[in-house]
Every structure is written in structure tokens, then in C-alpha cells.
Length: 488
Image (tube, rainbow, N blue to C red; front, top):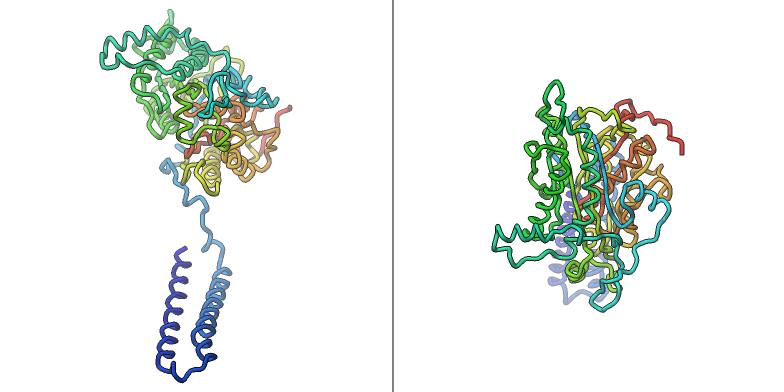
């Protein structure tokens, strides 16, 4: 680009010099010049000089093109910002165990059910029975049909919070907040049930081991950024009450981690790996929920032009979902009663697009491609090592072409109709839950296939996340040999 501007400046300078000379000559002899002379000086001569300079530039570029490729090669991803600073190979290739992953969304209540629905091509989001757009027309939404928010009995928690903080006495929970928490109930209960075999390590066993464990349970609660302080406070109290009632950890070993900032999943990774480096065998329970199925969310999204309607047919479909994951350090012992060893999560790559995916103009996949490239380098994994992929793009926004372009370019051996699952087609936009959903689905696929699987999240307007999930039996350090494909 620098060479281009230098060349352009040279051309402009030459053209200006010739033009000044022509004007001077014309002023000096304008009374004695014929119409032909004027045409030559004012038209043909500047154009001829300009063409000669342009030919010289092309010849110079042709000679430069014959230089060694290493001198001219430019990394196409150099312009894409990397959200994580460089680290040594050992740190980069560290992994975590995924002890449990559960979700609840429009496509199903378990990772296995959602994968089956995606493979079978279940019906796409349908007209919502209650919500309407500004024109009074029904909306397409990815609603979870069997939610019962009234069973949570949040009124008791609200009353207690308002009694402690009178300034919040006038607040109420929106319908979408209640639906999001209701969706989180089942995944949270399932993850807490998966922790029961580890009650001894978490301080709740009648028979203590030979050496008393100091393991703790760290809670990471992800709430939608659209929630206000009152809604987040009620949700926090509800989640803590559910965890305490489950009696899987003594209260002295239950810690609430600071909410992650814009780094999101990367900050959760840093927490888990940091605890491991400190020699702490702690578990991390990550929860997230989201719902845009409510009148307030519909009005807000439509006013921002980010809701699928007859007028904005290239905007996302409103959805709702919840997920919960239990992360453990690589040294955490395996459960003897488990049917199979936990899968491993390799370090995630997070990259920001230069502009939102929904902005007008040409859509590029450079950020997503760079993200997948970084994720592959955590193994290292050659493309053929990855037997499947899961992404959360829908079917009608630019996210679909972005995900497809990325996977065709980075993993050309995958068949889009057989090896790739597109969760956004059934679940709509799931917000802060999206990275956890693709991780849970990729873990299920990796366990079923016995080979690594790629999780790619493009749900957000700018953030792109990719990570590799592999079975414990797959050794990424065994060179670049491609393992035998598991039997169908």
C-alpha cells in the first residue's frame, strides 16, 4: 500500500509539471498558435506523458514481482486483531477437562437431542403465538415451548432484595428475564448432579480421604448485558440458592468468581488455567442464559433494526437458551463410574471483526478464518484431524455465508450436509449463551465420533470464537497423522 501511494504521488507530480509547462507555453504563444497546436499542447501531450509514466510503473512492478516470494508475502490475517497476547507453546497447547455440559434451547433439552434435531432437519423457527411487530404482524421466534417461569417462585427473592435495598422497591422482572432463568433450571440441575461423585473433594462426604482435599467450586455467572442491576441481582440470588440446595459443596468451598468482561470465554479460561498453575484442583461452573422472547426485547430489537421482520428480513431471529458447563484442570482424576473419559477443551481463539456483521457493505470472513486458524494451532491439529464442526450461524443473515466461507476455506474436507451442524438455524440468536452451546454440541460430537471437533461461534455482531474439542483418547502430539475415522 505504501508503494502504491508513492507511485500515485509521482504520477500526480509529473502530470502537474507537464501541465504547468503547457500552460506557460500556451500563454507565451497563444496569439501565434493554431487550433491544432492548442489541442496538442492541452490534450495529446499531457496524455502521452502520463501514459509513458504509467507504462514505466507497470514495468517496475513486473520486475518487483519476480523477486523471491518470501520478500513479498504478506500475512492476510495481519490486519485482524488478536484478542490474546502471544504465549509459549506449552501454555498455548494447554487444555481443560469438560466434566459436564448441559443446555436447553428451542431445538432440545440436551446436546444429544439438539444434535439429533439438527441432523434430521427439524422444522425451523415458527410464528410466535404471542409476539407481534410494530405493524401488528406475527413474528418468527425460536421460543422454548415448555417453559414454566412461574414455577421458579422468584417473588420471594424479589421481596427480600427490595427489603434490603429500598431503592429497588419499584423494580420488577421482565418476562424475558423470567424465561431465561426458567431455561437455566434444567442445565444447572444436571451439572450439579454431575458433581455429586466429587462430594468428597468438595468437603461433603461422610468418609474423608487420607489427605483432606482443598478443592473448591468457582461459580461464573454470565448474564445478558441488557439486564439491569436489579434483574442481575435477583438472578444471582436465585442461582446461589439452587447451588446451595443441591448440597454438592460445602458453603466454605463455594466461591463466586468476578463476572468476565468483554473477554468472555477467554477470561473464564484464564481463571481455570490460573488455578491449575497455582496447584489448586478446583472446579469451575459456568452458567449463561438469554431470552429475547418478550415485549420489551422485541421493541428494543426492532427499534435498533436487529429483529427479523417483513421489513428487516436479513436481521436475526429472536431466540432464547441456557447452558451450564463444568470445567476441570487436566490433572483432575477421572470418575471410575463414568462411561467414558471427559473430553478436552483446547485454548479458544477470539477475534473481533473490523465492523459488525450486520453493517451494510461487503461481508468478509477474514476474522472467522483467522480465528479457526488460531484454534487449529493449539494442538497442533492438521485440518484432516477435525472430523466435524459446529457453528451457530442462522440461514438468512450474513453470518451464514461467513461461517460457510470459513469452513470451506479452512476445513475443505468436511461435507456441509453431513459433517457440519448449524445450530442457529433452529435456535435463532442466543446471545451470551451461543459460545457455550457450540462448545457443548462439539463435545457431544467429538465423544460420539472419537475424533476432534471444531466449535465456531459467529452469533455476536463482532466477536468470533473458535476452539477445538477432542476426546481424551486422541493424542494431538502424535505428529500430523490422521487417525482412523470412527465407524458410522
